[in-house]
Length: 403
Image (cartoon, rainbow, N blue to C red; front, top):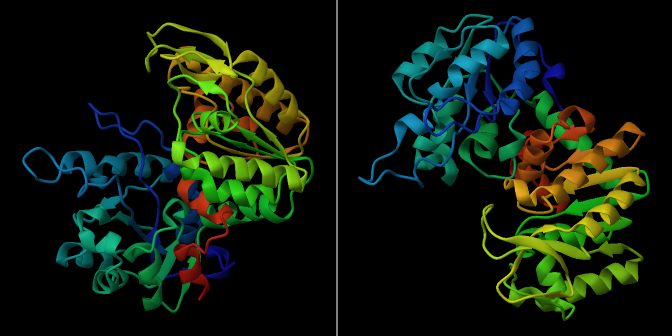
């Protein structure tokens, strides 16, 4: 993998695709989690230490998909000006703002950028051409820099203009440290896992995790299934699941996955019990219930104490752990215990020498919420990209650099 370590950036303008798609406070528009910005700082510092300059480009949200009531773009919510102060603070350099991502103003600022200076372009997704992978748009972006650096693993699975198409316009192109770490850690789990290897999967739907479930059964010793998706498996087994989330068109698929796991000698673990509620609310009535029979009008919103203890024991005895998806609706305090118990177990296993990879998204948010960020081996910055990598797909953002 060709990284920034293979290039001397002295006197060169590095056009760096970063992932500054950070969460913002709805009222103040202040960044509530700067992990993605912090992750890319070492890459930027390497370029600057070589006496190069940095032109940063990113997206923030989906402005063209979430228009205001009058049909216009919600500029204030989606402008990358929101990330300017935090980036300057973390990098220790005053970052200039390009005003746009293409056009004369951005081009002039990029042209006059001196070694050691940094500028941030406006949100790429203000242009529909970005997500369409438009070649002319990619060429306009490419004209701003001398070297292309992709450090945005979170968008590596998208064939967008700034992640895949743009690379064809550069002779010098490479990965940043974020991309390199993401791929190295994923490869370690996929191809060099120490056993026992346990995958923890959760979230709402089986359909969202279908390909990764099939792929993991070929690789793991234990496959733990929690969250809303567990109830489709439980119904497939003939259990009464009340009003719990279920994909009725996936019942046969669940049975097929269970059969495949059995044939492969993989332990597929489903929760024995649940914390059920009479409404999807933290204020709802709730109780513990055996998963063989959940009454009508009640829905499972977390795994129960027996399941939590069982899963934790399996996790603690593992040497490699992949976690993608929470065990319940951990955002609600009454239904967070299953996810919290899993996080405690993953941290405990890691402290005794296991390698733990947290698969971005809700799993990363849960680890952060419960204070275990520094007690796991690696937290991915790209949930969707990591999923597709584990599904065995070629990621366009990676392929574009390697071509």
